[in-house]
Image (cartoon, rainbow, N blue to C red; front, side, top):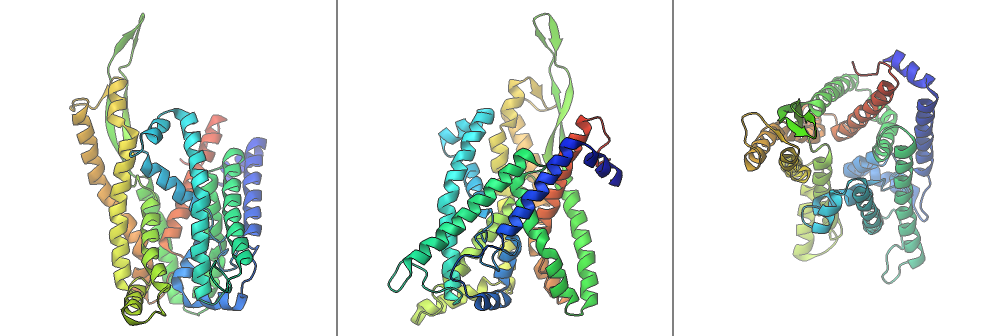
Length: 427
């Protein structure tokens, strides 16, 4: 591993890519400390000390939410826009046609995702600012009577511009650096918080037994994530021999790799967004009287991270979304149609509809393992609190993202090394 790293660093173009990626991460960390105007720093610190859910969201923003920075929302509005565009492709014929047009179609879809990111970022910025205003962190926000319209517009524009700036940095990393730029930005935000979490949360409390258990659970979780992320079911495929001109082509054998966790971390992001929505809406009506306030307080209590019902619903949603997203992506790939078009077939299975039904049944069976695993990964902080009595601030969701980004980046470095006839990282 170290020898492969040394050889990669010795290559000028790879060294330039690595240095560029590191430089963009440094710029990201500077942006994460640029605050928006009109924030009470003491009230903001108190809000995050008393709200575990806000602390978890701050983890994914790399501490930018603690400072109420212009990068407080991270790149998540763009991720949401990308997911929406993927889900709309089977429903909108024009988008489905673009998805089949190769690089030009994907570039067009990426433009649509960028355009959709702007209103989503405005909405998320408005919701975040309203939540902090209710916690008396900021004042005068909004467009009603007694509000400071100029301050409101400034905050919304600054936070939206921060998100777009981070998306731009991520795309620069994708073009000129190593790895997927958007994932690298998220990775940098999560990793930057680990030393503070370890120091203040576990070591600072003097609970070294819980700290040791935390390390063991973390190592086992990382190992399990690597195994499940790389696990796949290989479906054998045979291509028929055909005569083209005077040549005989085809006849080779290959396989279709169906991944156990083909949905990645998307189901957890879906489920987290839905679980955040009721509690956020309920927080707006906590001070209301009569039955409205009672209902709001009930939902606010249920959708707190200390509630067992919250984690039970979270687990169920993650499992459900894993199946949903895996099946949607399978339908978009059109594997049976592509196999039949190029003369490929699965031994013992007739082409066409029988092949589609067979692949769907295999994917459904192996997705059970991936869905249950993602569900357990999502509720691991609750299990740690239940069995260890210690809150795992660094959620297993963060570990899933970190491990996934590291694996993807190592594979790209591996490909770069193999192109130069060097032995890579993965043996």
